[in-house]
Length: 173
Image (cartoon, rainbow, N blue to C red; front, side, top):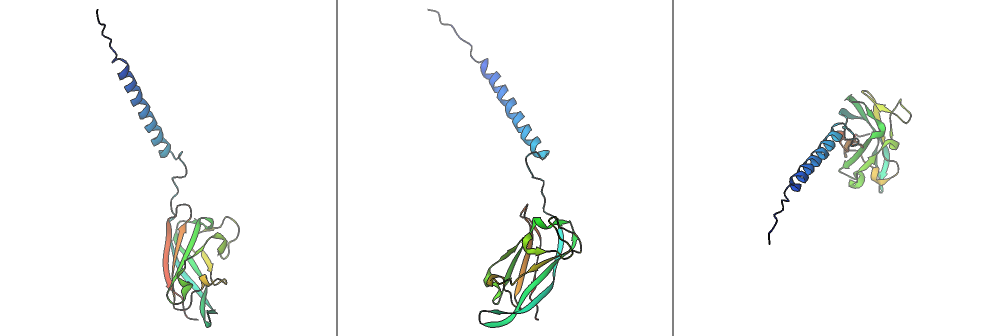
């Protein structure tokens, strides 16, 4: 009997070339999607601005059974840089020392913040604007007495990036 030799290697190179083309096209499509921004809001960047704490106001209050002076409000003043939408920021306040807030951080968002002279839903902060932060609203977690160190961080809620941060000591009345 005669044996016939079959040549089966012709299909394999064709499939290999086709697979390489498909993989190359998929990679090119993914790179193009990211490069043109079609893959979502990957172009959101954290604003850059300089802020400074000021205008600290203290009031008479109590911590436990003793009378003391507590931080009531302070301002973060926009000293320069990018404009920032109020709805995209949060302020984290981290009091340290003394009976300050019992070591618990306080987070303030749009509903807790005011910008003197500006109202409405689309408040944009620009150079010279102040964000007024009110504390001591009845919660023991917001009480920071005179002499306590208060660390604050202003962050962008879209990117979780830090815009500015600083600290101050609660002044005496």
